[in-house]
Image (cartoon, rainbow, N blue to C red; front, side, top):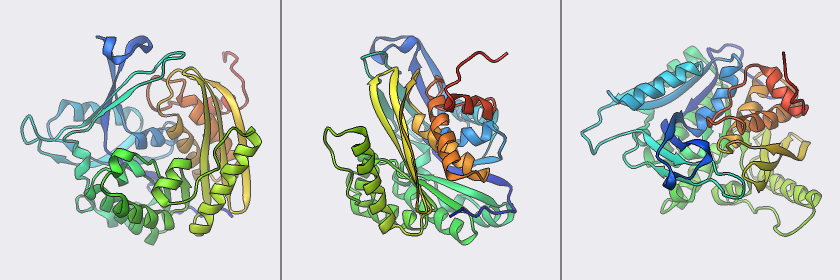
Length: 359
């Protein structure tokens, strides 16, 4: 069962997002004991978009900026360096206590000391994302989009962004744009809005062509019974995940691709990394393989970006999964939250286990 991509389009991938910055101590040190930090522009959704953008596909971000903010300018310059087009309104800051771009304060961890992440999102301008600020007819009908990728992080960020994502999904469906939805459950975003968000996420999932999530996502966003827990063999664990995905498919029969990643943390710098995909009635599994990790943040987004790149290129579902697995592994070798592949060969060499020097 192959996904049908639009033939007339300006953008291969469209991604709504709330941009911010991440500040990270150097040399893998903890935040509380550091006085020197690096800063990067970041969002989970642009982590995804970076894979196809670096590999030459036209990608666009829908977002919003604080007018006159040096952080906004920093973000715009970064997106341009990643070959990502952007569109978004400029919102007045409203004084020192008004709007701003979020700050993500995170160390990378090292060895047996796990990473710690602190999100500082007070006054986040991305919470104001509103469908009235964008010309959907121009974006979808005139310009044309092959795939829109929606994240549960944006869909749950505020009441405004929830409606924003729902309206984007509804309009995309009418125009033949494929919908990718990564559930990305966050408990703090859902607190006090559980039924409201369950209903919105369920509607978006019901019209999605590609549905991505882990066991927690499917259970807590969509109410699907998760995999059986317990100290089982790897084969039994994979079978349990497959049973969960089958239950998801029963509830969302219009979806073509279901995907989940498998991760076991041996240490901060060594993980077992795998994935499962159901495409139509075809199962594809990558049993967890050992990967070396410099910084784990963005690995799951890299998987999604590689998977979507393969879909946009019209590859088989098995090849899409392999490229997604390798893109996720590639992302963990970068200090940025997003992978920066030089070419497809760099990604495929990771899948093949070929780390020899290329001259």
